[in-house]
Length: 170
Image (cartoon, rainbow, N blue to C red):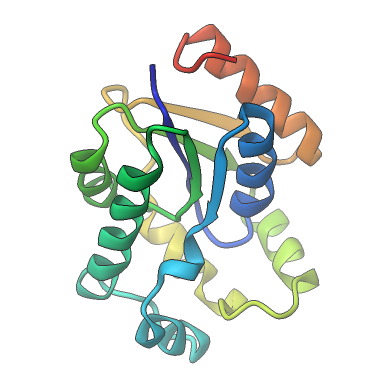
């Protein structure tokens, strides 16, 4: 059984909200992945500059390390994990890592971002993230859910899918 889940996706898709609710439902730890970015990444994104693969490497290593440390008790992490190569890197630390991807339209994402305050990630980087996003493939342990629903609806969708796939004990 899996003991680690990454709620992934572009900015504004609800990774943190869903991840926190999912961790509570499972009795696992929740980790806001953004807290593991090096300061240089935060500065770069806050200035409206998209991260490149080299920028993401220390961030992904920090996420992987946190997963390994918390795996015995269970962990849910929010992390964009936009590319297959990023998810592959995370899977090197946890082969049974599950990815949950809430899907929303660009318009809905922009509407959410326009209401968000106090976050370093500007809405101007949304199109870059959408262009970079590689949806999980059939050979990846992943669940795609309708991100348009309420947080409670998204949580129920996710828990139902996890139960159906027998990926975690609920």
